Image 1: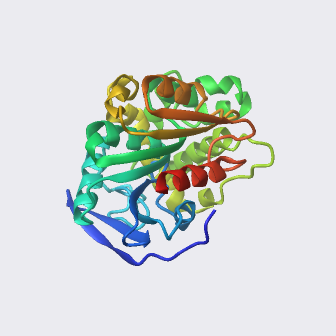
Image 2: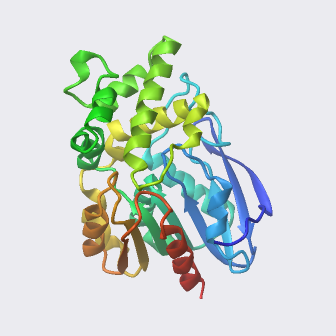
Length: 314
């Protein structure tokens, strides 16, 4: 990966609905335009994302999606309204940022939730996308949400039982993302905090599956826990606010947009079949399965992201 560089410009953009997005640009102001769509939802655009790009060749936009990172208002506040935080809102935000920076077309890098958002954005605005690099690919379909919140209990039975038992008994056979979202909106702060802890503990379980992977230290921060839990449950209970199967069905809209899909063979959180099915439907995508990798950028994924971006820059 490339050395960490500092932004040469940054700011806050008013995108309406009372939302102000933090953005920053790094690299070469005359370079190949690119935009980073972080995961979560709610993780924020951390500095490490800058290191995937050759700073001499790329002009990179990073921004914190609605409700997280340095954008305001902060979804860690349980009183912040999430009704204006949907996939359609985020797609519109990306377009406002593109216009604000006077970019015609750009490469899109996205991971995990960011890959869902990248696909939804590119299928809505294919003329604005020059290429895509996606890793830990997900489409946030109802089936994927059901897999993570319920069916994966067959792999982590004890951990899943604790996760299930974090909601009232009457809700344990229903939609667990929805049940947790309701707990996270409870007027009692103790109820909200316990729900955030239980949700994030399960999140850490199904993502950190590669041998030697430790717990995510970000979950030690109570504000990050609450922000992450609120935004993830909000998007999952609504299956990313997309019709079931839309991102697979509309992959033909990406014809002519070259893409590289990088996915860990050992990714239990988002099984490789998701990326494989997308590659079958997207005529210009190339899928690379990384044998020793799980969910995220470790075990060779990060190096392949850099290689793919270098190729597109050339």
